[in-house]
Image 1 (tube, one colour):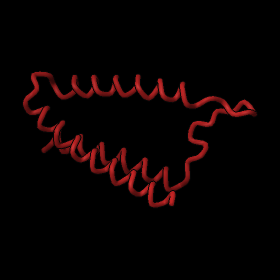
Image 2: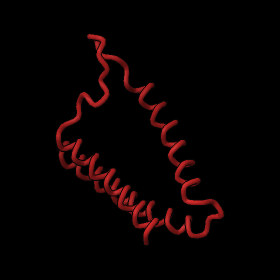
Image 3: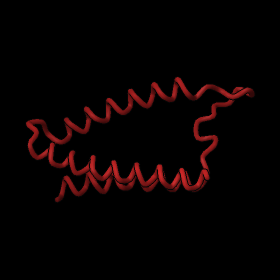
Length: 97
């Protein structure tokens, strides 16, 4: 079912995000670059990658309107917000931890 597949996908994303955060914190502690330089570098790569994906996969609809976020359910919005909040909490824990 779609709900089970979606829940499994979110579980995989959360697990990988946790491992990524732990690795990032360990890498930052042994990195000669400042945390802001590393965050800028990672953010720039993410912006380039996601911009490419939006341009390639988000073609206009038949009526000319863009379909970015068109099929998002309220649950998808909440999960996206929780993911972003988790990223901010990781940044705060690295800065003040």
